[in-house]
Image 1 (cartoon, rainbow, N blue to C red):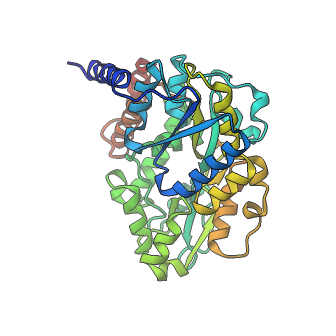
Image 2 (image 1 turned 90 degrees about the vertical axis):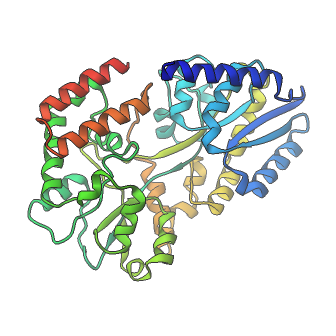
Image 3 (image 1 turned 60 degrees about the vertical axis):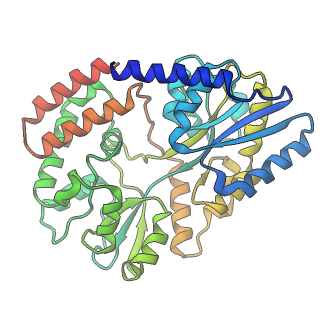
Length: 395
């Protein structure tokens, strides 16, 4: 049995289970699914209670799903006749559901509480199907004692690396998840047609030279983001890219490094824009409570509720009034508040993120090609020409 057939057989089985074993929701309940939010139960329950007080005709049934089960369970539920009314997902899987025609379109006029940059970035085929919930945006950590004048972008790293360095600048995880896909996107290389362009050939040539000259540790091809952090804490590399949540880990595990840690904006590529990650809500087209679900989603993402959630976590609000609150605009000089202000500011200059229908397969293709190029197993043009062909077959 092929992998694709196995997946669809599994989904069909889950649909059957959903139809016959899943308790039917009461007609007056709005069923709301989140991903891994149980740790914030007091906050979630408070928001639900407040909403129900303001809207006594609407009752919320909250179900929290383990992150690892989110996509499979959501797909099974959406294909059934009784899906949840509001679901917390990531944009990639949400876009896949939109492509299949399973989501409710949302009018522009309903989304005015969010920054236009975020809404523009989250459209599918020019239409709105997603309601933003919260975001994260990585920063650059650097050792100010060892690197008093840090590079501001990847091109500066490449240029300075050829002059010779005593330690690698950073450990970029070339083969981990979508790291390379995001880097290519920062250079405007985001399609099969662009992957073997002269721009892509030049970028890969520069990366190959930088790796060979010691700009990146040899382990960059095999080790993970966690090991990058460990190298930064051990002062084996000069820079580290990550979310503000890593500050506490550095403070607790490497106090000497923490004392010398400073922050700068996320490293950029040719476009000058920043990457970000987003979690959003979707409303299944089969929901019987679409308007109520939208009303609740907008309540969850109003200024007050966004700021309260932000203060409990390391997430970035996506409500534009919340982002203009001094919580995100003023820093008292403390590195933790600096991180929050830096990250929020980056949401105003975000890099458009294309929808890739076969994202996981594409990431594998790109990472394998990157490894071949860096290890000089074939000519760059040959590898990228093959990658273009393979990428085109995915679409």
